[in-house]
Image (cartoon, rainbow, N blue to C red; front, side, top):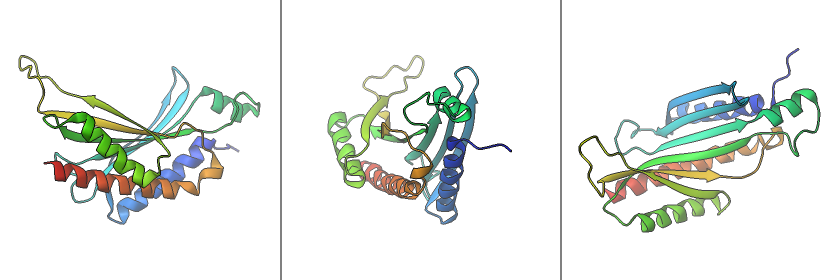
Length: 188
């Protein structure tokens, strides 16, 4: 009989818990993917959602939860050999939000990080990646709008022993999404 990987077990629970939040009306799921990369032998599950009621707005903040595992973890689990220190997968959370480029970007990034630190207790490592779109033959600098990808990285592996923690992780993500959406609306 087929024995599911740690990744598969966590993916099923994570996906189900996020869909529960969608059914409850707190969020609207906007996308999902489950990828097996045959070139590098890694797995990626990604689910994206926005706050319910604002999902169709241009100013809607997008939350993206990513679950990953790689060749060493898959092989160690299947071969039952200690090829890696701990068998498991990693989870990373991204928030994508529009920012007004006319504001002070460093101050805004600090305010957003402080907002997330209040929710997460300074546990994940937070980075901001800013991106601006420059249309052909309309190079305008500074741009009016930038997109900010905020990444929360926990820098540790999880396994089936962490399944009970997934609901709290999702609750924190939904709470962060709500507060970030309020922040974006207050900056308009």
